[in-house]
Length: 255
Length: 258
Image 1 (cartoon, helix red, strand yellow):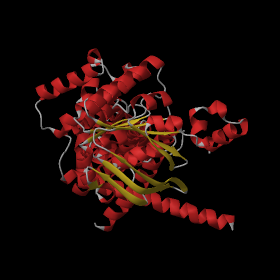
Image 2 (cartoon, chains in turn blue, brown):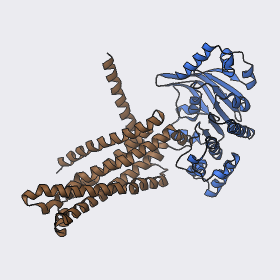
Image 3 (tube, rainbow over the protein chains, first blue to last red):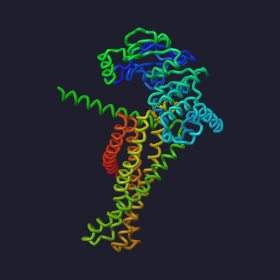
Image 4 (cartoon, rainbow over the protein chains, first blue to last red):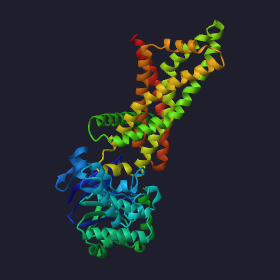
């Protein structure tokens, strides 16, 4: 479904990604794991065509997206949906209008059918009662769930999540995790970017681990858990790192 | 060495701004000629920009006309020409003060509003979300606001002009004791066809400046919520300077063709 080969990206004078290659199979849930500033969110933006790489190939459903114009990219994006870190709900629209946004924009379905799809999606995330609310009236967890409902209602075959549990309490985090697992059983292809080990190990079929813009691991959650690579062990269990190594990690993150 | 290096970077920075601004303008104008046209969004913006700015435009026009009547009468009195104050009011308002003052007020209210709204959308990833949903954010956000400004700012200017001449009449009639028939006859007599054309071309150009500078400042916002404030201020300052500079150039241009 998605194939990245030798992707390199520089933003300004900073090299963000180098030599990124991996595949996402249809129906697979792939987790991109890494620390803050490692470049994992940038990979989602590349898949969505929001950034263009300096070098390398990105194919989505067999189409090379790095050479497409913005109008053609818009067509490719019709098969994808992204749940943004801050949900990115449109402030001026109600929850109903946010969730049904793409369907109303496309104008292919009647208002009744769209309303039905919006209600079904909100029901799936347990927020049918919030249909007439404005985004400003929702909590962080509710906004994330509305973001997922928006992605679902669009009928996209590929869902991208940017830090879906960041900033949420454990119960809301568990709810989001549960929603991703339910979508997995429905055969939806999902790419989850996170630094949260709990969600990564719960939902992933395969995990890609990124450090400093490079892939340092790709495999199953079991393989990741059994890895003896010091960089991976340090990320999975920071308490095993010597203090100077933790300090080096923090200062790199700040940089 | 450092100085020349900074100068080089500054010049490159300005060129980049011009390039980005030109790109945004061309994409926004191209959006006028291809669907979807986002009629609902356009009507909403026409309401916000047009109806929403009516009050400040009326107030600006009223006080401008009243002050012009008072000052004009003082200047004309030594020559015994106070009764011709309406000529002075109507020509100065239609040619210069109406378009410029209305545009400056609208730049403060509408231009900064456009900049802060789009900047907030940019820093909260709503612009990226629009693109992810398959919507061209320039066509949806910029083209609609550009159309609304191009349509409504000339209308608001005409209203400001009418109210200013009316304000002048209030002072002329109630304070200076000038005959109403005499006031209105000379007010309309003084306005020539080219004044009306100039008075409509200017607000159209100002409308373009207000919409595009506001949208540009919003779209290219960097630096989170602090950036939103910076963009809003930049939009207001840049629009005002461009309005005053283009007013001079347009006046000069029209004078070149008698």
